[in-house]
Amino acid sequence: MKILSAISASTFPVLLLLGTVVQGYVLKCATGKEFDNRHIGELASQAEYQYNHHSYPLGPDGRICKAHEFDIPLAHTRATISYLVQVCESMEGYRLYEWYNSKWVICE
Image (cartoon, rainbow, N blue to C red; front, side):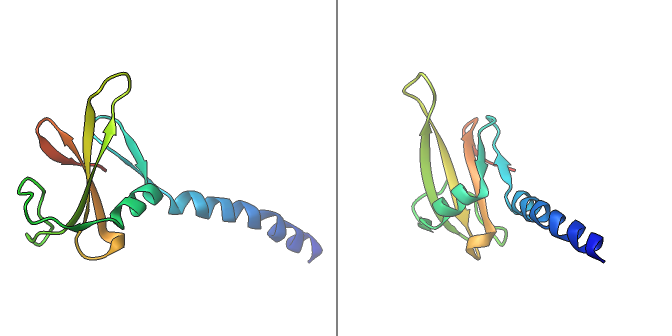
């Protein structure tokens, strides 16, 4: 019984680490830029309704969703890439888009 307890106790930290890895995930965009879910969650909290941006994608039900647009500068240039976090129903249901080839492309 002591051996079983020792094995269980030694695997507990490993299971905690695995849980942390499984809970975190990364979204990869068309240009190869990657975002972790914590960072995007922070940006999603800034989303507001943007009725004057007709280029923004509609939500799954065809309605306008809350959105937050932000830019990231490209290395060694003055150019930037635009990104859009869209929140349609709840904070957990956000989607990330990248402006790529003159349209919003979803990051997966």
